[in-house]
Length: 293
Image 1 (tube, rainbow, N blue to C red):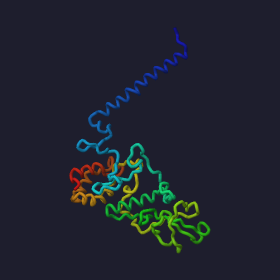
Image 2: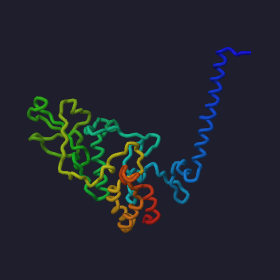
Image 3: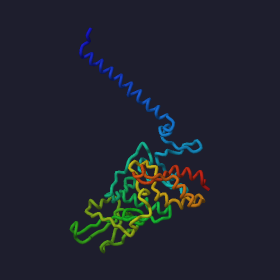
Image 4: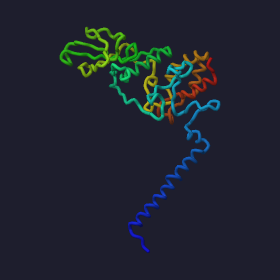
């Protein structure tokens, strides 16, 4: 007996569904699990976890903070690159800040919880904090001494080219002191919460200041990676931390520097990317070789 065409089509579709369910829903996932259990691959399949004395302390693929309960850096450890993934290094919230070079003006609201910092101010504050922690010059171009973006809103009589009538340091509020007292003979005011000085007609004017052209604090110490999960820092950032870590652990700086070099990886295939330092592996090695006093 010949089946109706419509029934034959449905049966063929059902057979295809069953075949692909077995292949892609069962066989393929089980094959990947089996491959992940092969010697040499099993650790990576489990998340590249790092264990010390049987206790998991992190993953070699995901960065982490080395801070105390209040969020302050623990001085005896090398510090990681900043992260904007969730509360920091959250793999479920991996993301960049989406802020760019033109993000130089903070939003200062009457309610502090609604205020937001520009990328420039974030960089300035991080650089200042790293400088204080590691005893290096934390100054950067276009940053104020108190760690915010050195940006003025300049008001002119005819909008663009007339005489200056008013100047506001848009990222500083009381009780701060304006990073410059006058601009073209006009006293500089502090910003007041709730004001949008750009919308009010002020011309955004970043001021470079007298910071060195090549800051002592490297870029990866003040900017987050695109994923927010970067487990590495640059050798330059590691280098400025050596003296602090050695002092806190009562170790020879040369020995700490040798550990840094041991945990530095060169460019991929010899030409891609930049050399990087594995922060977690380095700190684990420090605890093993130079236990905290």
